[in-house]
Image 1 (cartoon, rainbow, N blue to C red):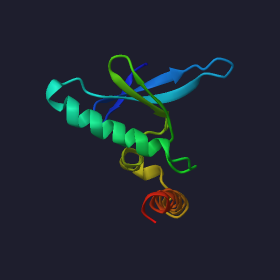
Image 2: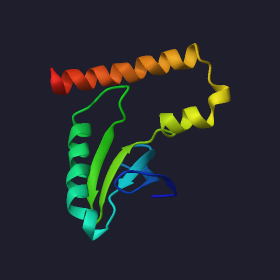
Image 3: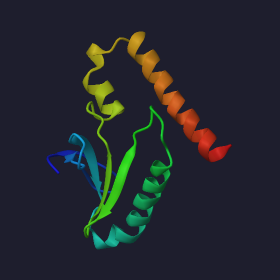
Length: 123
């Protein structure tokens, strides 16, 4: 794990590098679970529920989860989105965004991922 790249609902999010034998190293995001005893029980259940849902989602427009690890803190290893969250990107780069090209493509990608999720879990 390297530097903190964000703060999630359950704890810090770090940039990391995953090395699997026989494969090239991969940049990843590592979500951590806060260790605060008061939050531990409900947060752990919510965190693991998020992981269960994400493990069943395999789609080009949905961030993929790579795995979960306990040692003793709980970590969720995910695909790293190099540009960060879409919301932060839109706010920080509003002058660079082409409303016709970028917004149309991004809207399609978000809708496509949400449609996949809805079909998988609600229909």
